[in-house]
Image (tube, rainbow, N blue to C red):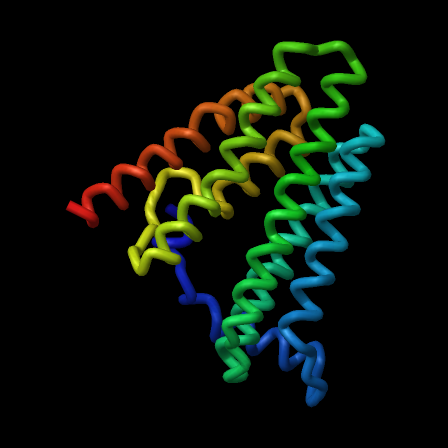
Length: 193
C-alpha cells in the first residue's frame, strides 16, 4: 500500500539530500544496500539483547538506506539487474534476522504463544517476496497485496518503540503476511486464466 501510494515520487528529494551530503563523491547503490543490511543485523542483535527502542532506530535507519539505494540507482542511471537482485536478497536478511531476534526473546522468556506467532509471521514474511519472485520468473506481475515490506517495517518499528504493542504487532504480521501471500496467489491465478 505504501509503495503503491508513494512509489518513486520521493526520488528527486532524496537525490537532492544525497548530493548535498556527499557532494561530488559517488557511492555505489550496492554499498548503500550492504550498509542497510549491516544496520538490519545490528537491529536484530539489539532486539535479541532486549534493547528494542535502539533496535527500532537501527531498523528505521536500515529502511532509510533501503529507500536511498534505489533512488540513487535510478537517479544516477546505475540501475542493474544484479543491483535489484542483490538488494532484494539483502532485504530478506534484514527482515528475517529482526524477526529471528524477536522470536528468540519470546523463547528466552518462555512465551510460547508469541514465539509460535512470530514463527508463523517469519514464514509469511519469507513467502511474500518468494511469491513475487516466482510470478516474475514466469513473466507475470505480482506487485499486489496488503502487507508489503514498507508496511511490515513500519509495524515492526512501532512494536519495538512501544514494546507493550509488540505482541499485537506480531499477531497482525502472523495473519496479514499470509493474507498477502494468498492475495498474490489469487492475483497470479487470475492472470493465468
